[in-house]
Image (tube, rainbow, N blue to C red; front, side, top):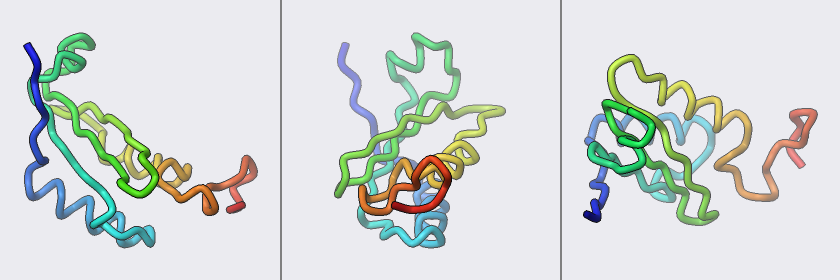
Length: 99
C-alpha cells in the first residue's frame, strides 16, 4: 500500500518558518510534510511518524522522527548549524567557517 505524506500541521510550519528566517533562509524555499503512517516509521518503530523537510532550491531533504519524547526540532537546529540546508557556496568547512 502506497502512502503519501501530507503537509505538516500549521504550528510546525510556523515554528520552522521562524527558525529558518532567523538562520537567514527564505521559508518559502522549504516544504514540510508530516507522515504519521509511513512504512519507514513503522520499520524503525517510530510511534509518532516522521516530518520531512525539503529545500526546493538545493534538493536537500531530511527526515526527522516525531512523537512523544522526540527531539526532531532540536535535531533540525543542529542540521541547520552544520549547514545541511545551506546553498553550496555557504556550506561550512570542516573547521566551521563558511567556504
